[in-house]
Amino acid sequence: MAKPAKQAVEKPKEQIAPDHKKELAKLKTRFKTLEENLEKATLQKKALEDSLADPLIYSNKEKFLKAEGEYAAATKRFREATEAYEEVFEKIIALEA
Image 1: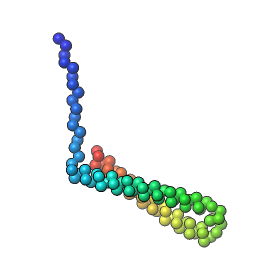
Image 2: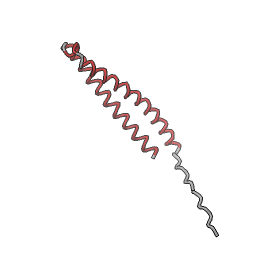
Image 3: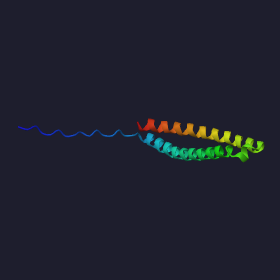
Image 4: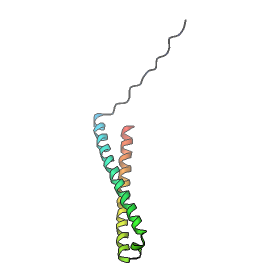
């Protein structure tokens, strides 16, 4: 007599607690905003890098110093945006685990 075929037993997916769902939704919204901010910071930093390479800028001391200061500020904003982005990303991963 043949044995009956084994049926696959589906394990129920772990449910995320309601308070975690709200937190996750907030984090995902924040993540999207941070992603947009990081993209803007990247573009600003790149534009300033390009301006620093322009002979009209680096040959004029005043223009160069102004561009250099703007670049330093843009680099700081970029770094801060990256850190915030990574922090929220890690929180999302932890809640989804």
